Amino acid sequence: MTLLGIGEFARATRLSAKALRLYDGKGLLVPARVDPVTGYRYYGPEQVERGLLIGWLRRLGMPLARVGEVVAMEPGAAAEAVRGWWGGVAAETAVRGELAAFVADTLAGLPRGPVSVLRCAAVSDRGLVRGENQDAVHAGERLLAVADGFGVGGARASAGAVDALRRFAEGPEPAPGTLLNALADVVGEAARRVPARAGTTLTALLPAGRRLALVHVGDTRAYLLRDGALSLLTRDHTLVQALADEGRITAREAAVHPQRAQLVRALAPPAPRPDLHLRTPRPGDRYLLCSDGLTTTVPEPALRRTLRETPEDPARAARALVSLARSAGGPDNVSCAVADVPA
Ligand code: MG
Picture 1 (cartoon, rainbow, N blue to C red):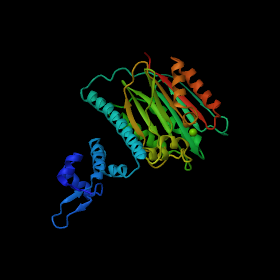
Picture 2 (cartoon, helix red, strand yellow):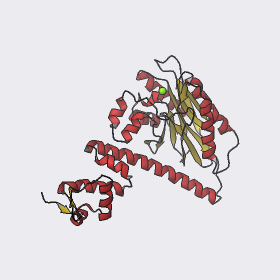
Picture 3 (cartoon, rainbow, N blue to C red):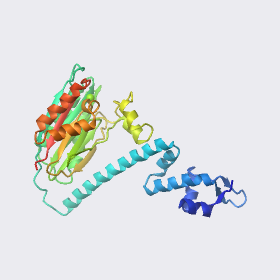
Picture 4 (cartoon, rainbow, N blue to C red):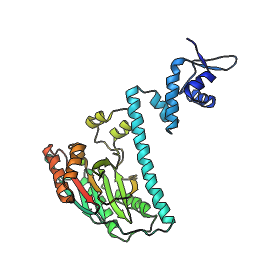
């Protein structure tokens, strides 16, 4: 086999000699042979493909440690890993974009604009199997929230979390720039009140000036229906989502995984670590917050269809979604809160 010198290999892979030394040091791309006298590196022609892949991943901005994991995977798993990682980057970038716009508006002293008022409704249902409803919901002009409690005292945990947010939403509006920190404090305080053997998820939207603040922890979800298309605004804080993000399981495997309900983050002591985002609503937007009793029984195309077929009637939309979950066996408590941004 003819080995390639470092110059030739660098040209073939578009990687610099400096980068190749780094990747050798990290064990990502180890030369086939190093001359013991001169220290020159030589690479096998079959290593070109790996070198190109490393180059692409670095150009995407993937950290080296993650690159090392991806190049060690089978192609199918590597593809899933790249998709999962990029989904996270894209979501994070969108969140930062909203925050940047908010900070710029605040610095420029722009008027905060009228507070958006949500036209909304919520339904929570025990389902057909569970003995108790541990979900909690709220739909009001200043707050839309869904929480899914678990453990002994789960119903108290979910109700307490929603109530803490409701009191915050109905209180005096915090100064611009302090909203997200104030929300983090409210959620932290609510977590400290959760009963010892319980916890809850929490997904909520609060109008704040021209924007909506989104609070999220756990596997309750927020969706947006805009121009007929449905998009998921939250990432589940579950073990299977983490495994899927790392490319260790596919989205299909995640949906049937025996531990799919296991949370990696929830509103429970000591630190709930909620995701806190700002979003800019548009007239005609429809938001759906729901518990996993809906999303594990009703596929997304049916969610989208139902939300599209019930325009300007959030109560009808919420009722229709809950009855879909019940028709699918209603194995869990199911809660839906739907809000329309007036056109
Ligand atoms: Mg549930």
